[in-house]
Structure formats: structure tokens, C-alpha cells
Length: 181
Ligand SMILES: [Zn+2]
Image (cartoon, rainbow, N blue to C red; front, side, top):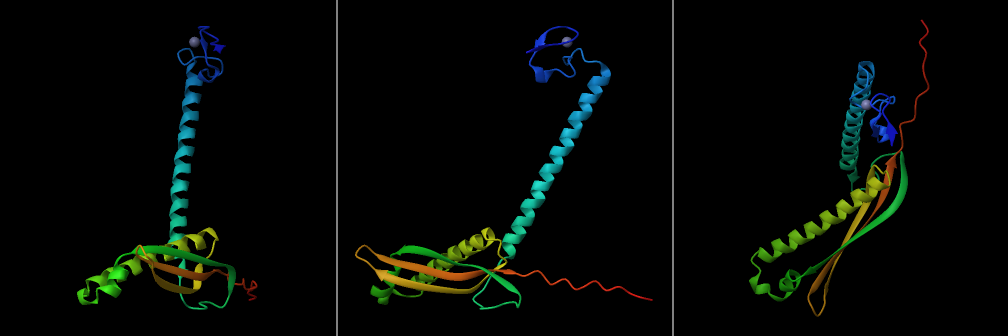
């Protein structure tokens, strides 16, 4: 605790400005304090805006990551890492698909297709996330395999995918040309 220079009451030190409590502080100190507070608010606002902008740029970068089965999409690339992802689904419909052929009127095929699509989506989301964390620009040469296994308790569908995270090399800077008139 510290005492106010004027009224001599004790206050926690951070409540005193230049030794005065808020009630006793001379007007020029009050003014100075207000300006400091305003400055702090402006800085906080700026930091919040910077953070929002940064998040926006990161999201744009995340969404711009290319996912492709192509082996090469550009000449100048830098290989970063081989990645893989796996998604396992427990399925009844796979079993139904093989055993209840009579009942297949598109419904089962649709739900199987939907599960496959979901699983692929998950694997691709995972690829995008991994590429982003590795600061890559694309995942190329993606290979997807799916397998179905009938077990005692049901059927399992698994999707396994591999791909190569790459980075586009920055364009080579051309030498500066000076114009001579
Ligand atoms: Zn005081």
C-alpha cells in the first residue's frame, strides 16, 4: 500500500498516479492519465484488428491449399513431406450391401456412397490440416485406397490415403534492369 500525497489515505500503488489518488490528482495529471488510457485503448484496438486480419490471412492460406492426385502441378516445387491419413468406419450397410442384394433399390448404394464421401472428406480435411501445419502450398500425388472387411460384429470400411506436401518455390527474382536513355 502507498499513501496519497494529498489526502494521505493508503491505496494499492497502482491506483495512485504520480503519488495522487484519483480524487486528489491535479487536473494536468488527470489529463495525462486519460491520454494514457486512450493510447492504451487505441493500441488494444489495433492489436485486435491485427489479430483478426492475421486469422483471416491464415484462413485464406488454409483454404488455398491445393489437394490433387496429379503428380506434378508446377515446375519449381520443394517437396516437404510424405503424409498419410486413415479413416475407419464401422458399417452395417456394407454387410447389407453384400447380403441383402434383393433389397438394393439404390438406398443402400446411396448410403454407402455417402459414407465413402464422408470418409474421403475427413481424410482430405486431415490432409489440408497437415499441409497447413507444414507450411505447404499443396498436397500432390494423392492416392486413396479403401478396403472392406467383414468381421463377426459387422463390417469395417477403411480409407487410407497418402500424398506429398509441397511448397511452391518463390519466383526467381530477375536482375534489376536499368534504363539508359
Ligand atoms: Zn488523495
